[in-house]
Image (cartoon, helix red, strand yellow):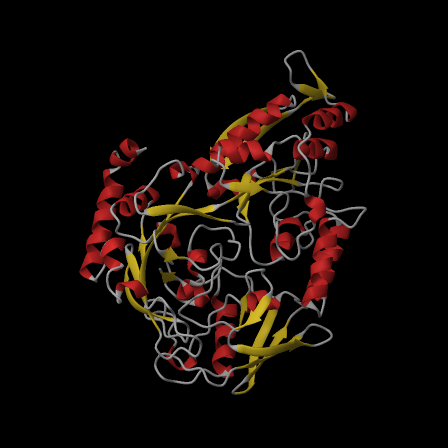
Amino acid sequence: MRSNVKRKPAALLACLLVLSLMAGCGGSSSESRSNTSENRSSVVIAMDPNSEPEAGFDPAFGWGAGEHVHEPLIQSTLTVTNTNLTIDYDLATDYSVSEDGLLWTVHIRDDVKFTDGEPLTARDVAFTYNTVKEASSVNDFTMLDHAEALDDTTVVFHMTRPFSIWPYTMAVVGIVPEHAYDSASYGSNPIGSGRYILKQWDKGQQVILDANPDYYGEQPNMQRVTIVFMEEDAAFLAAQAGEVDLAYTSATYSDQTVEGYSLAAYESVDNRGFNLPAVPEQTTESGETIGNDFTADVQVRRAINIGVDREEMIDHVLNGYGSPAYSVCDQMPWYNSASEVTYDPEKAKSLLDEAGWKTGEDGIREKDGVKAELNLLYATGDSVRQALAADFSEQLKELGISCTLEGVGWDTAYDRAQSDPLIWGWGAHTPMELYNIYHTIGDTGLAQYSPYSNSTVDAYMDQALASSDLEVSYDLWQKAQWDGTTGVTQDGDIPWVWLVNIDHLYWVADGLQVAEQKIHPHGHGWSIVNNVDQWSWS
C-alpha cells in the first residue's frame, strides 16, 4: 500500500503544500499539540477536496445542504436533528403548523447576535428563506411561497403546498443577516451567529474556524478547527506524519496501521444500490429509450433482491466496514423493517424458474427469446462502485443472469439509467429521499431516476407530506414502503435493489474524543464535524 502512495507525487506535493500552510498558522503534529493548553482546544481535520464548498459559505448556494448535508457551523439554523434524527430547536423556541399545512409559524430566540454585533431577528430569517428560494440551485424550495416576519421573534412560512417535513429543511438552512448580505461576496466573508467564525480560507487548501466568543449557546470545547482538503492518499500521508488529528479514509486503507492513530468507523445511511427499470423497453416520443424487458418482470426483481449476498459484499469489497442495505432509509425514523430480506439464492432461482426464465445450454436464462442479460453501469472513477458492480455481476451469474460492466460519466448516467441498471449512492436525513426516488413525477407517469410508478405508493407519500403532524407522517412514509398489500419492498414492486451502507472511516489521533455521531448521510464530508464543538482531548 505504501509503495502505491509513493507513486503519487502530485498528491504528495499537495499534502506538503497544505502542511506547510498549517505550520505557518500554528499547525503541528498531534503529539506536540497535546502538550499545550492552546493546542488541546484545537483540532486539524483532513477532508476530501470535494468537501470544499465551491461557492463558499453561503446557504443560498448550497452551504450546509445538497449532497453533503450538515449543520452549517458558521450560521445558526431554526432547528437541528438529534442523534436519532428527530427534531430539536436551535434558533427556534417552538413552531406550529396550520391544519391545512399551508402556514408554519416559528418563534425564535431574542438573545442572538450576528458576529458584527447586530441582533438576529425574524426579519433576517424571512430574508434568508426568501433569498434561498430565489437563488438555491441545490435545494428544492418550490413548497415555499414566501416567508414573512410578523415581529422581531415571529416568522411565518407561507407554503404553496403542505409539507410536513419542513422541520428537516429548517435544520439545514443557515440564517444570514439582511443588513450585511451580498450574494457576490458573502460566501467568502460570511457573517453568521453560529458556533464558529470563518477566520481564514485558503481556497483549494484549507479553512480555519475560530469559536464565536458571543455564541448564545455553550462555548465550544474546540476553539479552533482547521479543515485541510486532501486527496485520500495525501490524507493518509498526513496522518502518518502526525500533522492532522483526524483524516478521512476508505476501506482501501483499512488494513493499514498508523502509529498514534486508531481507525474509527461511523455508521451511515450512505447506501449503494441499483435501479431496476420496472417497465418494458420502449421509445418515447422524444426518441429516448426507457425500460428493460428483463427487469420489467417483477419476479426477476424479487429474485435479484434475495439472490444477492450483501454480507459477502461487505467483507470482500468494503473490508468489513459497512452494513446491509435494504432500503434508501435504513435506521431512519420513517424506515419500514418490512424492507429487510434474507439471502436465499435457491429461492431466487425458484422464482426465476416459476416466472419462465429457464436456464439454457450456456447457463444463461432465457424467456420468449429474451436473454437474462444486464448491462450494469457505474460512475467512471469510482472504484468502490465499480467493485460492488463487479461483485454484483458475479453473484447474478450464479443465478443464470449474464452481466456486462460499463463505466459512464454522470453527464450521461441519468439518461442511461432509464434503461440499464446504474449503481447509485443515496441516503439523507429526510424522508424526501423516498419521494425523489419512487414518486411519479408530474404527468410523466414515471419516477424521476428509473421508470416506475405505483399510484398507491404515490398517495401515501402525498398524504405524508400533507400531514399536519410530523410523527404521523412517519407512519405514512412507512406504508409507502409496504402497507401489507403493495409497496416498494420484496413482496411489492421492488424497483430498486439496495446493497450496502458504507461506513465512513477516519484515522483518529490517540487522545482525541470525537463526540457521538448521528448516522451519517450520503457524502463523506462535513457530517463528521456536525458536533466538533463538543470534541475534546484526553
